Image (tube, rainbow, N blue to C red; front, side):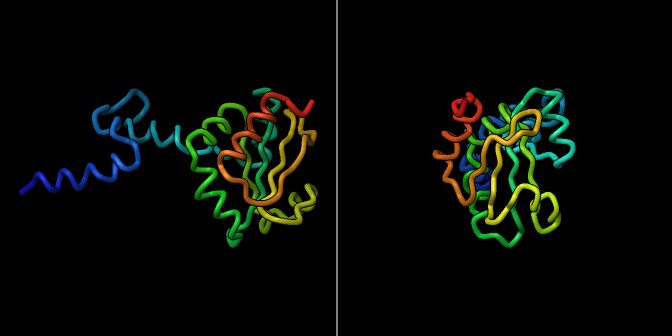
Length: 154
């Protein structure tokens, strides 16, 4: 009778590709689930902190402008920005900054945000590399991240 309960509990974990968490047990800095969750999310930082981090860490910036009611922003959030390879590339090669353009209108205006989502790529010193407006599918976005990270634009 209890076997089906265990199977039902395992289905979501297997579906999400987290079978290793069930067997791993606790790790040094928290549970295995917490560690896996940290790896599988973009590590967004606020604008000012991110710009400082970029200089300190000598990393480029991925600056994303969005709003809560933007359909294509939601598509980026639920599709592209949840892709494991995209997350890995963003966290490894960039300082990811996320800005709500309705709340930070001056900042959005200074980056000439006219459509959403708007993504700017910046050098570590804050100088502009280029921007992309609109939804970008995961595979295309990954190619774009690789191009910018490898400085293919130079």
